[in-house]
Amino acid sequence: MGNIFSKIGWFVKERWKTYVLMFFLLITIATISLLPAKVLGEAIDTIISGGLTADSLIWIVFLLALLPITRYFVSFLYNHLSQKTAQTLSFKMRQRYLSHLFDMDSQFYEKYEKGDLISRVTADLDAITQAASSMLEGIIFNVGLILFAISVMAFTISWQLTLISVTIMPIGLTVLNVIRNRKRKYIKKHREIYADMTEKVLESVEGQRAIRAYVQEDNDLKKQYKALEADIESWRYIVRFENWFNPLFEVIYGITYILAFSFGIYYIIQQQMTLGGLITFVSYIGMLFMPIISISNIFSQINNATISVDRFDEIMKQEPIVHDHDDSKPIVEFNEIAFKNVTFKYPFDKQPVIKNITFTIHKGQTLGIVGPTGAGKSTLIRQLLREFNVSDGQVYIDGISIEAFKIEAIRELVGYVPQTHMLFKRSVEDNIMIGKPKATTDALDRAVKIADFEKDLHFLQHDMQTMVGESGTTLSGGQKQRLSIARALIKDPEILILDDSLSAVDAKTEDTIIGHLKDFRKGKTNIIVAHRFSAVRDADLILVLENGKITQRGSHEELLRQDGWYKHQYIQQMTMK
Ligand code: ADP
Image 1 (spheres, rainbow, N blue to C red):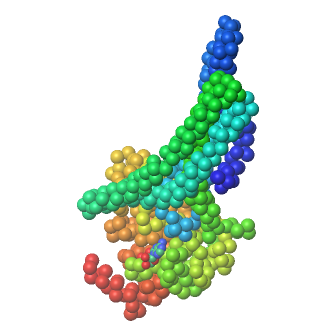
Image 2: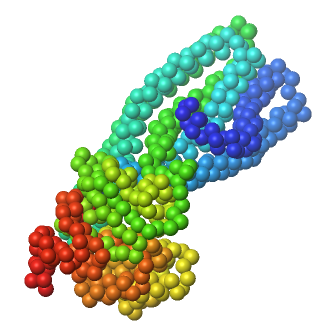
Image 3: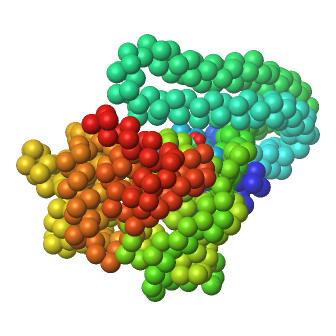
């Protein structure tokens, strides 16, 4: 419980005035709840003693009618405040979480699955806010009610009877406590199964085109049903467990009633107690039942929430390995990039993917990178995005380690077109403008022109305003590539990186784009990873990467003079034409 308190303490501090108000409202509700039984007991004793007058009867009826009305309004205000604070807490925690996700680096996203990250901000966060909102009510109201009731019972009716009836309650609470602790284990397991189910559904929704194309609907549905069943089964297990053990408490409670009645009647016979007193007493015992069950439910909610808080907190505690330092520099100028003996291994791999990479490229030059699939070309160029730290060696910008610069400054420098295109469900224009939201219309037109996307616009129903379906479903592969290139070009980056970004365009379009890059990007640097040699033919330097190592380097002509992968592949491509 301390755990959840410490995690939302900042919020309680921020909203302490509301919490104080809610506290007083709860005390009022508890007091109002207890009064009718007391009034009734007094009335019965007055009737029995023959002292009931018309005036006192009007008073009793008036009081009994006034109490529920007052309770209604106070409860309304309390519920309103409680719901509002819970919603605000959930909103603020979600805000923190989402902004934290943007601080995280690629290693983090290699570790956590999407479904898991989503379930932590949905199901887990709901459990936290639910517990946080009922915690105050549950603890203050119910504990207050129990203490009040017991005090009234002990001090105004009979302390002996109170002692007899109430001593059995701790036994009931202990039983509940044991049950709760066992349940905690099952809840944790259930949360994991739920996250797994979310991941499966997400994967299926995202991959539905591929699934349909390969007629794998049945197989996929089977997998999803299995995950759904696992989720339901784990929940059923918890409910079954509760159903078996929770009624134990009612048995203990029944014993309390029997004790109160038996001893109460004995005390009435002994004239140590009045009938009205016993009626009030037994009503209070009845009123204790709900608060004790509620406290137990709240503890179980807090139990769930503690697991959720841990899961939520696990993410919030993650620190990106790649991050800025206090003395991280901006990039004022850029003249040269040098890789010196760079070796890189993905965080969860054993072997490095690129090894001992050394080369230099100057501002205004074009670098081509070719090599077999899986050789490490993308991995090599992605070192310029500072997604990870290199495992060995160093990447330098003008002689200074890339790690000394602000991450944002490096990303500002680079326009990166990845292999897989991330398109958003927005218009074509908005999708391009992501590259530079404040770009002018001229910059937009220019980017569209260089990327040779202009011709595509005529085929789109609403030109630039055509909505792109989820993940670009309404565009062809080549159109998506050209749109992505335009997005990178709109910010006129110092360094443009095309990571196999021309694979889906025909040879003529590729020629046009390469020609445009030459014409429009004078003095700027281009890095082109390509499968077709035509895309890198004019590059100032071409690197051949095989199995993570540079095996050849030079200009197109130089490489053709060497006997190696480049020449063999080139001849093969020429003969296939
Ligand atoms: P290329 O661009 O030359 O096709 P990549 O750089 O994409 O090659 O991949 C090189 C190797 O690194 C492959 O064996 C690939 O499986 C592996 N790899 C790529 N991305 C990751 C990653 N995020 N985590 C682990 N291994 C990866």
